[in-house]
Image 1 (cartoon, each protein chain N blue to C red):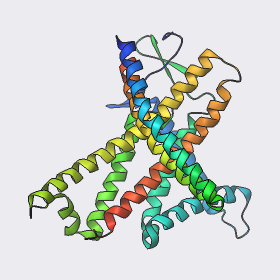
Image 2: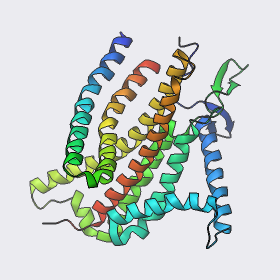
Image 3: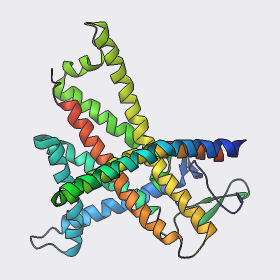
Image 4: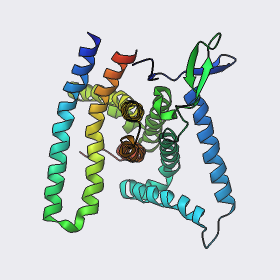
Length: 246
Length: 70
């Protein structure tokens, strides 16, 4: 069975640029970034008072996430919005590109004499490196804004030697920050990778009709995970930048 | 032996989230029954909370996939 199904938990390297091994998910993420940039530049240059259909389509997620940010962060929404929206749009396109026919099914011969094969394209978020990078960025930004707005008070949250209980609480908070990174990374990676495996296995067992509802499910999961990522980032930013109540 | 480990990991890992999602949607339905005007608000929050509960099952799934394929 494993010979017919090609499931690899790690992204496979396609070729090397110097010391950098270009994996299939890195390659796909370049395509995603290029696509998003071109669309953004094109729509941004053709902004009109009476919007075209394309402009409307782009404005819907921008407005939706901005309203979400306003409902969570209030007045600070405008500061956090750019990063959160960038992460949202990158994650959602990365999740959905795995569902496009051809991604994960077009194989390339790699290795010394083409002995092994690897898919040419793979959803970027189905690779732990991408999601870990996103998680580090997000948690790093939370620390940055926490330090910027609360200054010493934010450091005191983690290192407080006034009494032993507060010292212990600070230790727990530190572990909590690390757990945030891990849960961010594994939630996104697990959902998307599990979805890909689910689709591969169902279309292997019953090739017709049966996989279709799972495609719908994966579209939904891709959207929900992008929303969960941006919403959690907003909530953590809000927690880090508000003064602790006593 | 590996197959047993995989089955146990995902099987045991799915119990908790299963119960959690059941409680969550049950309570959400109760809330909708009491206040049908708030359906859309309750629904979005329910789906978000379910996504968090589901993430626990996904951790178990990732572990079993790692055991299976690595």
